[in-house]
Image (cartoon, rainbow, N blue to C red; front, side, top):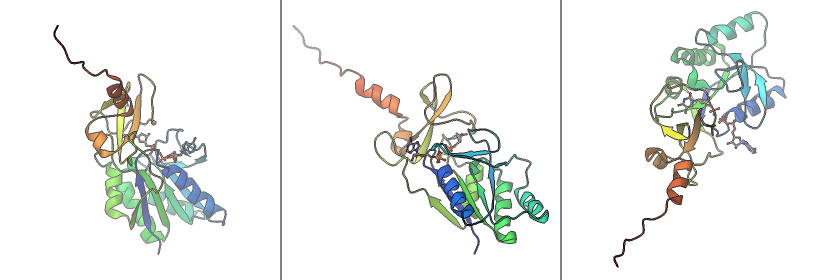
Length: 216
Ligand SMILES: Nc1ncnc2c1ncn2[C@@H]1O[C@H](COP(=O)(O)OP(=O)(O)O)[C@@H](O)[C@H]1O
Ligand SMILES: Cc1cn([C@H]2C[C@H](O)[C@@H](COP(=O)(O)O)O2)c(=O)[nH]c1=O
């Protein structure tokens, strides 16, 4: 049975790499994909992994009907065996419904990849709809790690190195981040709650202990 699978996790846990691996293995067997993405760091119409691989993709702009796109391609004689969607958290909820329709009405597998929650620990609308509709939700096997060594489960946003919890939901960026720019860091829940990033944990460790004041 074809299925809608949602591979979810934090930033930097290997989602795009897995998407590229699935596409590679299937294309080696002659299967053809449509690859959608939205706002990849590498630019419009690209699916890129931090391991250095990048492939062309269809930019899923908000006005793109993903179901209509695939139907149109097939009706013009194009071969489509399955669909991959990266940065699926950025899709509109209606576009996620279109992915479910691709599975149900066109009998194609759809593999969607995306981060579950934003820097405030709130679900992205696209991810929420995927959790609601997916046949299968998978957590990536290679664990992203918090600076403390625990499994990273949440995404923190930093501005000038400082963790922030207010701002626009969508700001395209990368883990790390130079001064003056938005960056991200993956943390465990405990340290996300305490707003402790790797930088603040280092400065806390470096602060000299207050010496006891002795008289005389
Ligand atoms: N220099 C490197 N050597 C080995 N693995 C790396 C290197 N850089 C990144 N990675 C791997 O790539 C993962 C990030 O892959 P990517 O597909 O870009 O993540 P995501 O799409 O989830 O943000 C990291 O978690 C790490 O496992
Ligand atoms: C947490 C968070 C992330 N983003 C952006 C930052 C990146 O451009 C993507 C995630 O890409 P990745 O391949 O999974 O690393 O999402 C955002 O816009 N808002 C957020 O809260």
